[in-house]
Every structure is written in structure tokens, then in C-alpha cells.
Length: 304
Image 1 (tube, rainbow, N blue to C red):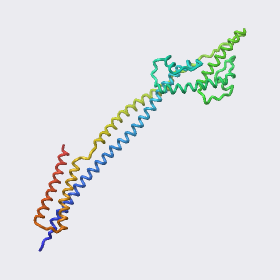
Image 2 (image 1 turned 30 degrees about the horizontal axis):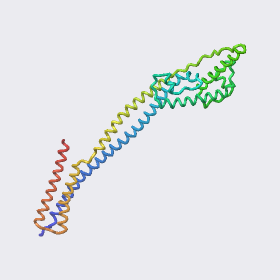
Image 3 (image 1 turned 60 degrees about the horizontal axis):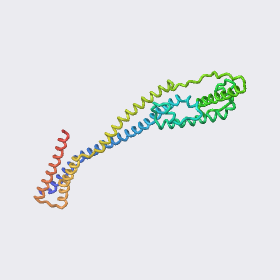
């Protein structure tokens, strides 16, 4: 009975192919796991950056709202002073009169510009209807509006009322002076008391405190997120495929060459010599040694 000369080479090729498939599957799974970890880190970083941008936007809005409330409180304090003057002072002059206020310059300038615009509009409105003001009668502003059926929906009510009182008081002064010069009886003094406007209501105080607390929480969360995003960025920047996986691919390529390709070439060329068998067996065992060496290296690495 003549033995088949291909059995040794086919056995070596099949065994090598099985080993390459097993170890190759392990390496492929490791690479996929690393890729999944990298994608997870990238998604975490993207989510935290989105949240961080939202916090920054909220912080800007909170700071603006808080500073605006403080500026409005300042203007309430100086409202009577402003309405008493014929010409509105410049912002710099107003701040020189009232030092010690630490207000946001841009918001202060913006709100003062708005207030000046509303004040000028109110003065123009009252001046336009000043002929309807009867200084001989004690007529309140609201009553004057209803009597003359005036629409003030586009104006600031408080500023209009202040301007009404100012114009009315000026007309009373002028009329009193004219009567005194002509020897007429003086008109009765205006017994209305100036309206006291609180600088900040209880609701506004609570709202201001609530916004400050929220701003503190936002800044704390933003501080923590900035550190987390920085840490994730560092991990992603330093993320590299382990060098030992590349060595594993090299070992697999070597085993595939000597354990699969070489026997297949021998079978195809029918080079059945004794030295060829010895050479094929030696190469196969060298591939096995390389594979087991790589596995031992991985085990020792995991133990560290």
C-alpha cells in the first residue's frame, strides 16, 4: 500500500489555518473592542461639549438678567432726580453723582439708552397734550387720561406719570407767578404727595436671589464639565492601538506563511523530498512557538 504524500502537508496547513483563525479572531475582537471604547469616549466628549455650550449660553443670559435687574434698581433710585431735570444728564455725570455702584458698563449703557428713549417719548407725549392739563384743578394722572381718552399703550406708565406731574407743577408755578404779578388770588397749593417707588420689591428680591443661586450652580457645573471634557480630550489624544496587537498580526502572518502557504506550494508543485518534509515540520513548529510565545506575553501583560 502506497501512502499519500500529501497528508503531512495538508495536516500542517489545516492545523495552521485553525490556529490562525482562533488567534486572528481574538485579535479582531480586541481591535473592535478598542474601537468601540474610542467611539464611546468620543460620544461622551461630544455630549459633554454640547451640555457645556448650553451652560455657557445660560450663564451669559443669567449674568445679563442679574446685571439688568441691578441696573434697573439703580435707575429706580435716581428716577425722581432724572424726571426733575429739563435735560437728561450724561451717563458719566450720573455715575459721578452716585459713586459706589459696581454695574456692568455695557448693560448700564444699553439700559440707560433705553430709559432715555422712553423718557424723551414720554415728555413729547405730555408736551403734545399739555394744553389739556388744568392746573386749577387737582386732577390725578389716571383721571386725566380717562377724561381725555388718551392711549398710552406704547409708553411707560410710570415715566408718563412723572412727566405729567413735572409739567403740571411747572404750569402751576408759572400761573402762580402770573397771578401774583397781576394781583390775582393765588391758586391752592397742590396737596398731592410724591409717589414713593420702592427700589426693589419683595418679588424682585426673591427673583434676584434665585437667579444668583442658579448662576452659582451653572458655574459649578460648567467648571466640572470643563475638567471632564479636558480629561476626555486627553484620553482620546493619547489613545493608540496597543503595539502588542501589531506583533500578534506579525506572528499570524508568519504562521500563515510557513504553515499554510508553504505546504500548499509543496502540494501544488509536488516537491516531495525528505528535506522538504523536515523543513515544513520545522517551519510549522517555529510558527507554533511564535504563537505560544505571543500568548504567554499577553498573559504576563494582563497580570501586571
